[in-house]
Length: 300
Image 1 (tube, rainbow, N blue to C red):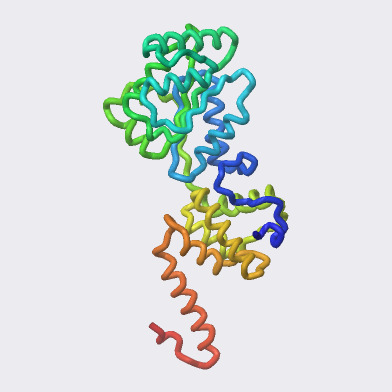
Image 2: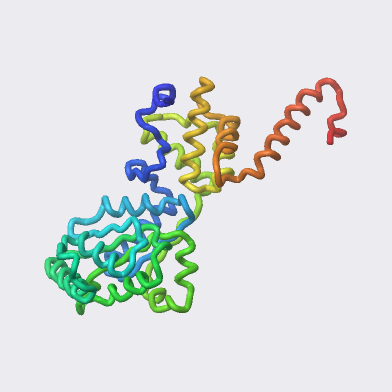
C-alpha cells in the first residue's frame, strides 16, 4: 500500500476507534472533561450525543482505557436489549453469575446486592451504553429505575449514554420527562472546523510516523468541505486521497485526489463537486486565452 511511499509506520486514517490515534481537539477534550467531572461527582445520568461519525465510540473507548482503578466498568455496545437482558448484561459485566432460570425479581435482588457489595468495597460502578438511541422504551425506563438504587451518600450505579441526535428527540417526549430530569450533565459533539480538520490530519499523520503534512492546502480545504467536519468521513476521504496520490507517484495528495475520493464516497457534499470543476475549468480557460487577447469577459 502507501505506507513505504509516504514513510508511514501505520495507517493514519483507519476507521476502527483506536485510542492511540485520539486527537485532543477542543470538542472532544471538553466532552472528556464533562464525563470525568460528572462521574467524579457521582451523578446518576450523563449523556453525550453527536452525529454519526463524530467520535462517540472513540470517547467511550478512551474512557474505558483511562478509568481509575476504583471503577467497576460495564460496557454495552449493543443496546437493543429488553429490561431483563439489560439486567443480565450488567450482572455479567460485574462478575455476577447465576442460573438462567431465575425470574426478574430474583435477578433484580441479586444485582442490587452485588452493587451494595461493590459500594462497600469502595468500588464505583459505571455503566457505559453506546448507540443509546437504539434502546427500547421499556429499557430506558428500566435504566431510570436502576439509578434509583443508592446509599445515603451516592448512587450505586452511574449511567453514561452515548447516542446520535435521535436520542435527544426521544428523550424530549413527555413519557421520558422523569429520565430527562435526571440527566445532570450532557454534551453535544460538534463537527470539526476547517482549522481543526487541518490539526486533526497533522496529528494523526505524526502519530503514524510522518513529520510532514501529506495533503496540499487545497486538498485540506476540500476535505473540510466535503466531509462536513465529521471525523469518520475525514478518515475515509483522507485514506482514499493518499491511495490515489500513491498510485500517481505524488509526494502529497492534492485537490484532484481529494475530488476523486469524494466522488467515490457516500454521504459527502456531492452537489458542490460539479460546480467546483466548472470553476476550475473556467479559470484555466481564462488563463489560457487572456495572453491571446481574447475578450474573456464575454465568456458565459
